[in-house]
Image 1 (cartoon, rainbow, N blue to C red):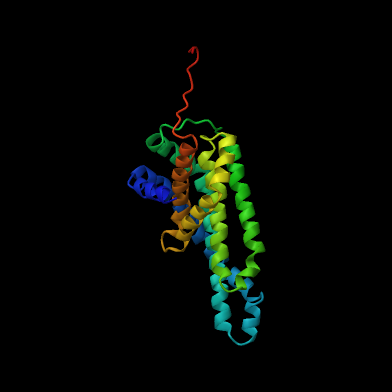
Image 2: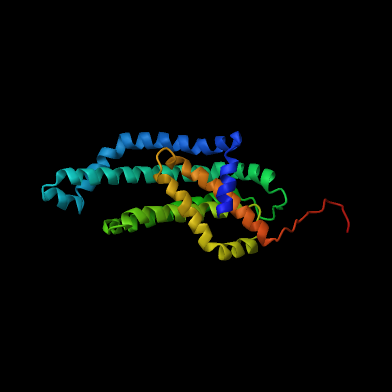
Length: 243
């Protein structure tokens, strides 16, 4: 995992990689501005009317209820913006970044998987749906001390792993290799998701997190695949060639 993060930092020296990183972030910023202008006040009012903010308001601590409702509204908007950025990254940016990095840093890895835009898009959309459902279902648990910080981070880490691990290997790994990697690297893949999800809490880096996550997962997954193959280079004979 540390090697993947080191290589990701090294890849940031490429101007082309920065073009891939900044695109989804810009789209997410525009989305966040539009949604906050249209819905932030509505979300604050909605949260104030719900327990426990409504109870706090009744106790005379309206300032605290207002602050918690505003925080909740911003968390919803930031999560939605992150979701937009991660979908754009997975569907549009990751394939371009993968082609660039695979050719430059992993030319020995043969592409034995299947390039399937529909499957990758469906994986990303379904992961986003499960993320939203899980996020909403566990929302009451945020009232438990500590879980209000852990749960958003956990769901973002899970979303990173579910989305980027699959997309990073779809073109290179066979189904058997993908199953083996998922079994071998289950915990490191999730921990990498936590490491990159933590960037969402860093000012100005939060909306860059999906693209930076994709970058880290590409390096981690392709290097893991290289080690599974133990350095073997698979060549595909040209038509008409004979043994």
